[in-house]
Every structure is written in C-alpha cells, then in structure tokens.
Image 1 (cartoon, rainbow, N blue to C red):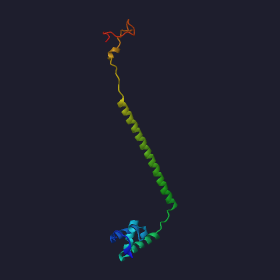
Image 2 (cartoon, rainbow, N blue to C red):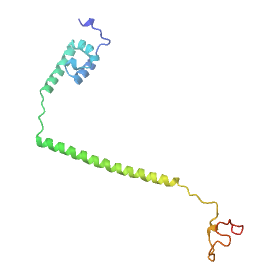
Image 3 (cartoon, one colour):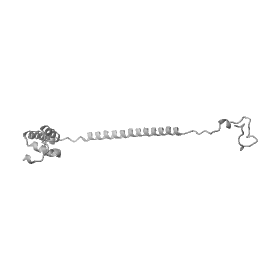
Length: 150
C-alpha cells in the first residue's frame, strides 16, 4: 500500500523526530512538502512511537489554560505602556527640534560662506576729503578728477 505513493526521498528518523517536535503529532499541521514522506514513515514502529509522544504533549498543551489577568493589573500594564509611549513621543520631538535647529545653523553658515564682498577699483584715498575743503572747488560736483586728484 505504501509502495505506490510517489515520494522523492524517504524521510530519516532524525528528521521525522525534529518535525514532530516542532509541529506536533498531527501530520496535517506539518509542512505540505513533508507530509507525504512523513505519512510513509509514520507507518513504521519508530514513527508511531514518535507521533505518540508528540500527541501526548499536544494533549497536555491543549488542556492548559491561561487565567485572565485581574482588571487592576491589566489597567496598570496598559497605563504604563501609554506613559512610555507619550515619553517616547516627547523625546522624539525634542530630537527633531534639535535636528532642525542644527540644519538651520548649518544653512546659515553655508550662506555666510557664499557671500562675497565687492570692492570698487578706485582706491579708498580718493574719497578722503581734505579737512580744509568746503566744496568741490571751482569745477563743481560733476567735474571729472584730474591727475592731481588721483
């Protein structure tokens, strides 16, 4: 009966035991790729013994029930979690503000580095007036400078 099944590679006892430990004694819970070979191995005496042990563990786990937490304890846990979330948000906002201030400062420094100072080609002593001079002379303000002025 087992000989007519199409199985590429027979399952080894070590692999069967590892899968039984991981997925339990019910073969329908096992990975589909492993089920055909596992079903064939389960017909052996060793396979039945492994599945029996796994089945007993499954039955114990199925009977175990976790008591519901007391309402006061549940409220304290949820309250503590909410407080931590609020503190985390504040901390993240503080770091965000710090980061934005740093970016602004970096932009200001970069902007100052790009500023160039333009100086005229005329020497600065051209603009110095003589203390005794009260006007631009006879020529008037529109006159062009002479060689003496330069």
